[in-house]
Image (tube, rainbow, N blue to C red; front, side, top):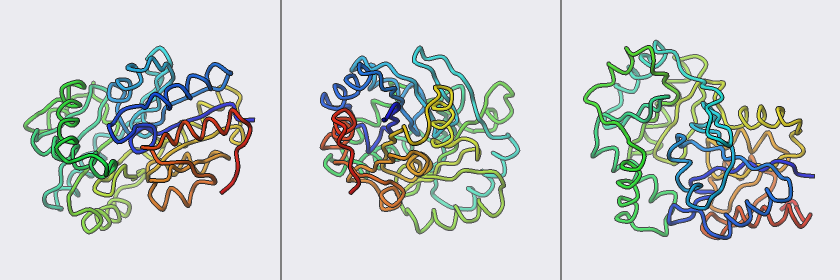
Length: 294
């Protein structure tokens, strides 16, 4: 019997309009009404994750920034798993060797970017990649909206952030339109030269860098343990590289139809795409007792 469902957001729960469909929202609430716990596990920070949930009055805990943070249903921050500032400096020195990368720092004080235009182009490109049914212009409108709604902070230099002892660096992201051509050797160099990292991705044009303890699978497992729930009582739903740890951990790891090949291989089950209410379909199987292996 499934007692906990954990879902990714972009490319999974969110549709091609970067929203939660009514079908998905209703399915989540049906599951909750029947005593099944529901939790979001996303690469987004808390404000960006909370916004679409709030629009549908969905109340649930949130694993943010790939597992670097956990928030309870009331929005209380239960923990932060950050990177040492010396580690961040080493990572940034390696990133500087690769031209045309756009970097961002995700912190306990919000998101920091040092280039507004590149930031908007980066988010628009990622949204367009994850949702091929929308135009780049629509993706850019969403990117601008995200920046305004979530108070992204634009700075000339990241140096002052690294010198501030009150700011915890929870995740670094690096984006390039060159994709794997640049990112594959970059990832290999980071893994060889910087210990204790978890390097994942939420699109084919980025990498996301966390502390090794900050992973979705670890966070969902810890939350389940707190509730007395075992891995064989959990369904996880995702689409990308940063979902692999939770897709592998849960007995009912489920990949949406639009998932990358690595996510489909890690999962034991599949469901429809994010634009076809795949989360609602998976939840309906749980509620009907008709979960099956494809």
